[in-house]
Image 1: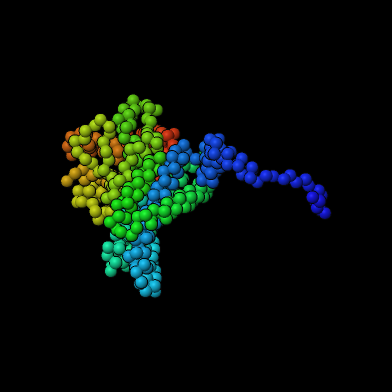
Image 2: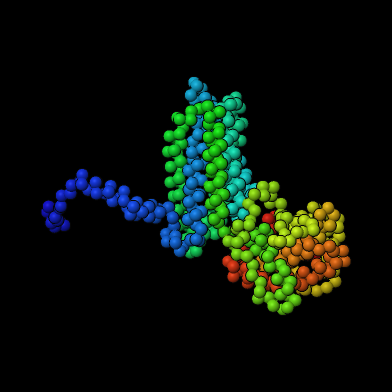
Length: 451
């Protein structure tokens, strides 16, 4: 044909029927399916994901998407149960139903807002734990929604509790993903990671919704039938979430990860200190720690600031010793308060510049507990020094019978060893990939002032 401005073009007629047939044949071959799969991955994974993110990212994304599919299917069934409970299929007044729904959503959003303000920085300290805990809360809320038709007269309180749980779960999952995405970064591509995570969620939600719509009429509205099916879906969802967080290696240090990174070299630190040879200290890497980290300690939801440390492998401890970081003075017993008074008196009699920016107190009543209190001016290195000092003391307290005099002597020795090996210890942490500049050791940030 001839165009006045753009000149002439030659047009070849194409047989649409043959073209569609050839396209279908190309797609149905193994190479065709593989090529289409690669095209789909471009929309679901970060650009140059082979090098721009960690090696376990694909494993994490795979299980996260599968978890989202199961979660969406169970969500469709629970929504059906809520609609049945509110009576939309039984001639209920539409305005009353709408008001109940609005109040339910409002209470849920308010509960989620309070949760976010209460937990704050602990999302960054333990993203793997909070991601799994969020999944547990979401699944519990879904199960509560499913049983709502059994008690239709209590729709508003039951549905409100479930919606509060859902909002808490959504906020916890969203907040914890930020730390997880940061751990996968190998380039400055956090925005790309976050965007592709959104694409993965949307894709999984579409698949899950389609499956839910297909299953819903088959299952029906009987709670006796719906509940066990949703229970199975919730179980599958939790398994997938656990598998996804198992592929995550968090490079930041909290008290538990610091101990798991350090515990196998405690003996080496003592030996190297005696030989003046600190080059043999080699802490565990984030990948090694991830396989040992406990993410199921539900009793510490509020972040009480203490951990009970497991002993070194192959060692049977004589007693359990907990480490408490930033303990409020009001929670210290009389023995610890007396130790603190004695420390303050001794520090006023000596040059304050020679003091460390932390103090360690030992509780010896019911079970041994090591309290570490940091002064206001303590730096990140001071925090690591106090933590290393605690680890050295904890190891001796767990595995040796010591008198009060021997405990004081051991306390002085461990402080000396920690100070002598601090620089090498930090270098070893950094060499293994740990972030020593952003610590999450002090969950409550309870610091004290010098007299």
